[in-house]
Image 1 (cartoon, rainbow over the protein chains, first blue to last red):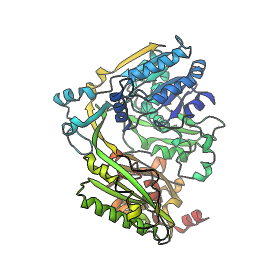
Image 2 (spheres, helix red, strand yellow):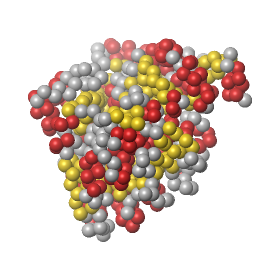
Image 3 (cartoon, rainbow over the protein chains, first blue to last red):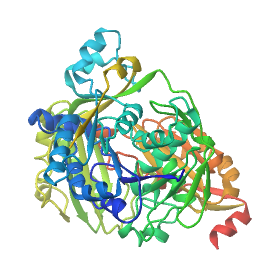
Length: 457
Length: 113
């Protein structure tokens, strides 16, 4: 059996718009996976849906499908995307409408995986003995239940495999794991059993490489960034060439920019890594200490040896809740004494906030251009620093103090140290703080609720 | 022994999980992995980051010639709670690589050349 080629076309919502188009046009692939969801994305989508019941999914996905539909049909490329967000049905309807309008009625099937959204079930789940305790703080969800904005269980590959088996050409999910979008096609194509732990673990590793797009092919590559930087204008996103035994090659289309080397792939493998011995997914626990990498020609890295262990009894739940307000304001100070002036302005600002009696949960001051990223590791700023940006951020449970803070920055231009500019953007915007509540739930509470629906365009 | 920057013998990538930053540090040459593993103890990394991080966990990944560090309570609450410019911990990788380390002279000769 020839390898199955699974291409990555989007590493997050807002990633390079041309990537999915390039993946279907610049070389052969069998599947295209698109990852749209980050932890906070679900709550943003929930907010959109509460304003308009027809929204709440990644609309960019529908536009992408519209653009690549002729390629998908002609080359028989199938797509998996977690673009459904919190309104999978609306996303499916939009894709079906796009396909019909483009003249593809009857020419493709759209699958939808429903049931990961547990927002409406939370009170019943808590009453039923599932406290949804925060994995980081140990608190029970009850304490923030009235402020919860979205709640979704991370689901695995099985329903996607079912949709592929029913002939779906496009599979739309909600909060499925990012990795499952890559290994569901392997399970389907190779007929891997749901307890074939080593092969599933290999699929998870492939999924981890694909899920951040060009981060595996030279993007954000620290190893030797100069060697690759000038080719990134035309960067090729990763493609997994999977074999039935679980080994695979990471590559990209010929003639694209970027680089696939043991070093670029290793950087992606350690990205967002916890305990490398147990990378927990809904389908398997993968052991990243068993991965073998080998350069297998230019822009080709072979991955083999991956071992896995049985899946756990629980699924992760991603809950977002409203946790107050914040604002960020900036001013730029020029030589001489740029840093000292910025710090003096910060003291003046804090004095005024205190005199107003405003209470904040946190006030954070950074000097962008000196220590905003590496903090105390860089030592005190040199006296001849040409310029620095003062960045002050505040957060509070109530909106009022944050609102007032946004009016205290501009006055520093005429009532603070000299050599200041950079306020053309106007008053800072008050932003909602949406906090993330990670929890676990018995998978038996979720899996019976999952539904696979496949519809003809 | 000679003093070099960690960035001369290793590369790295960092990311976030809630309020925790992970920093994966990779030897630039497989044969330097044992040296890296000796140099980068939990104590050394904790001392390097000082007030920038809380507890530090360390994992060895010899098959990738890499170490993974988890720096807890390093992101001011993490996610959208964080007021930091780098709320996702993306630059903790290069912050780690600023570290000055003592390496055998033959290794230093290789990185300086």
